Length: 208
Length: 208
DNA sequence: AGCACAATTCATCACATGATGAAAAACGTC
DNA sequence: GACGTTTTTCATCATGTGATGAATTGTGCT
Image 1 (tube, rainbow over the protein chains, first blue to last red):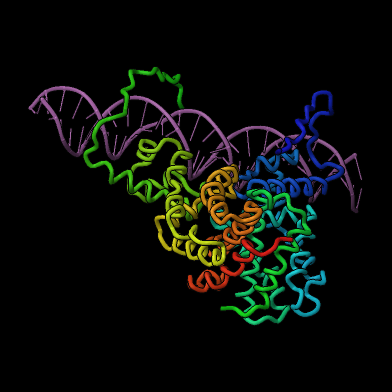
Image 2 (image 1 turned 30 degrees about the vertical axis):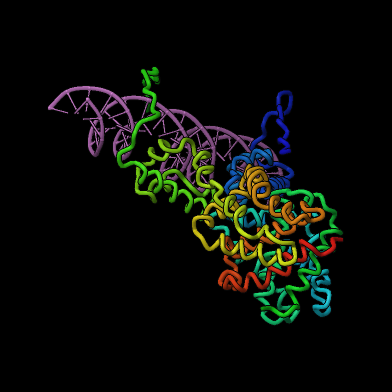
């Protein structure tokens, strides 16, 4: 269902204007949005600077002008806005008693907002591409997972949060990438109810 | 610069089928092995015919000679040998009482054998690449997951097996793709002990 | 007005990739 | 040894890619 950018048949329209446009910052945002969508939809390798530029309705060189290399664009597209969210939300408050449920609720809320879903999806897609693993380790785990684990003052936080990550990644892949039914269509509340106890176990149950 | 028009007159092409092969099978197997390794390591987009040929120590054109296009090579590299294994192993015998543990043991054993690990890893990597989702739905889920679910005579088998799939995919991604420590280095027995109860819950516990 | 500068476009470069087809080498068969 | 088939190599082609730099145009400042 990939919508195509407006063909922009600029026939009777004003001639392509060069030079500085009045609403310049518009362009940068458009590029970023297009990049987010494309990275989230088709991953890093499946996204070309040209396609991003076309989707944003700008010249490919502009992409390089605003963001540097393609890697930079990818990083900018990720731009973990999840981070401030995570730090702010009440997930970290209180003990680990209902942490599983709160993490799932946070996850669902993050996923409900396109602003945060697209970067996260792009992150997951980029994770399995060549060279992407390091990026995810440096980004997702250190910025999102580890702080949560530390905040709860768990024993073996890395180990427990890796388990949590494995469940969340699996959910993302199966539900949003593979779109495996009936999990893909399950309501968010069901996800929370199903996965919260499991995460809770990963966080607090004794590990073998 | 090429100023000559492409002649490209189809001279009598010899039918290249049938016949005997003196020292051939070696090469074909080498290409296939290299392709498996590369697809498993860097995914479809991250694998080039040239790199496969180089790893196999043959000319790139040979890859096209034995296997057709790159897609064909990918399909040949997958070649779900997981299937007969799954059908044969005792996972399906007995009731669902300890199915979680048996599934994990099967998973570990499959993963322990390079012969089956590489195609599976390639499958997972291909899953998140453009167009790969359908392949995985048609392959992994229908060939591997669903039969298991049916054999156990579960209620809501698709839903339960989707949950199992989410956990297994997450494990694969985090452990083998991202190589997130300490999960990446955890011994197989620990994996079984940790995940078996969770899978068991997905299979038999009442669903919300 | 005039000028500096940012925003934009155009025209390429350099390179890797998938793919093809023809020539050359290896090999068995007669 | 000659022949035919198969295996292998070589030389390209066409394409898409990331990236660069120069030219162009409008904006805002002085």
